[in-house]
Image (cartoon, rainbow, N blue to C red; front, side):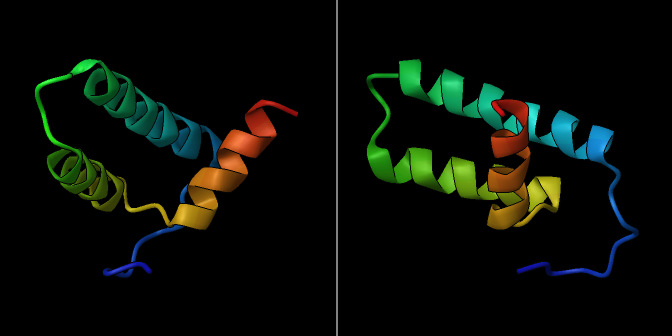
Length: 66
């Protein structure tokens, strides 16, 4: 679900945004003191910040490993 009308994002920009999400996830996975719910909220906020959909993230990750 996209909340705002945006100009199309090229593949390089998508990869940069997905790398941002991967970095956030990596940092959160190392934090043993933070609860799961807080981590989910941060990841959700990061996803909204990138402006990508779940499908776009999955597609970009899939393309990186194939």
